[in-house]
Length: 350
Ligand SMILES: Cc1ncc(COP(=O)(O)O)c(C=O)c1O
Image 1 (tube, helix red, strand yellow):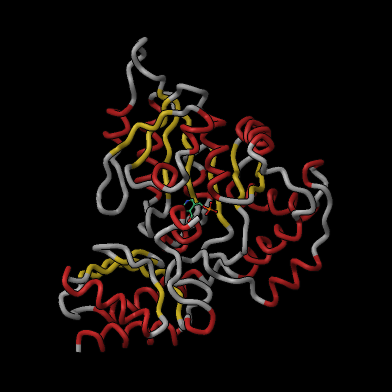
Image 2 (spheres, rainbow, N blue to C red):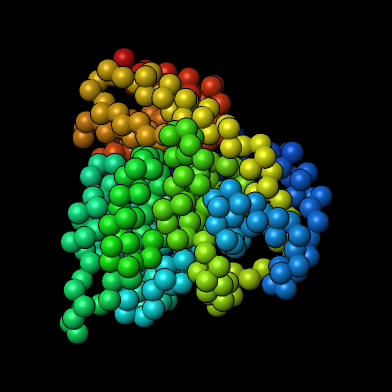
């Protein structure tokens, strides 16, 4: 259905792709990860009998010091179940203007759960203020939807929300008895950049959605962690959303392998993104923004389309949005790919 395709669709295929910077979701399981998947002990997870899934859920619950974890096929489904575990139909949640739940999850919270988003304005790093949280909460009144939840995200388009900032926003929400959910699709990137454990962020919120299929390089999988009550609600919602799966331990094993072997490597992704930013510094007034494993460049209007054609002709993929394009480093981007990107952009402007 071409009309339904995303703007991130590749104009190249197969060997023509030399470096794919579109997202950290494009990684393919390594041979060692595939071996771990093949060897996984499995059972029926709808019956709660898959030992590998259970171990993964427990492991992430322990890492975040939460009571329980629940495996989901995707971050979208995990976020949806989390929001709906906190909000009933007609309830309101507060959320940043550019957040993934609001913009990139097909309006599921409203369409499937009747939860009403109230948008908080954000700065360039995707951050809103604690004051904005206070102002967003509605007075109890027959005219208003009851405000129940604050939704946070970290990282936000690569930008780290510090522990202190996140804690201040969550504290503002608590003053109004709101629940707090954190979309932590890339929380390991934030933790790595801040030099802290993911529990330092998780302790300020009720539920956290942790993706294994982004920088950590698993082909699939997200674990929602939280208090027992929220996870029990999410368990029922997961079933309703069609996310109850059977011998899924083969996939959870990829997540386990990622936690064992790929967490420390996020620092390499950040360093490679920084190398690209340094390599492009000062090139033809390119506006370069660096944020953990993401890099954003805004070429002059009249260069944009030609630069995109030039990159594609050299086998380089990125999110070629206009006016700002995005490059993401990940497990399948090595130093060669970094050098290729920098030299190809520099050649264009030479
Ligand atoms: C910040 C953020 N949250 C949630 C998701 C959703 O994850 P999934 O693609 O597994 O549904 C993504 C996906 O890229 C994301 O970037």
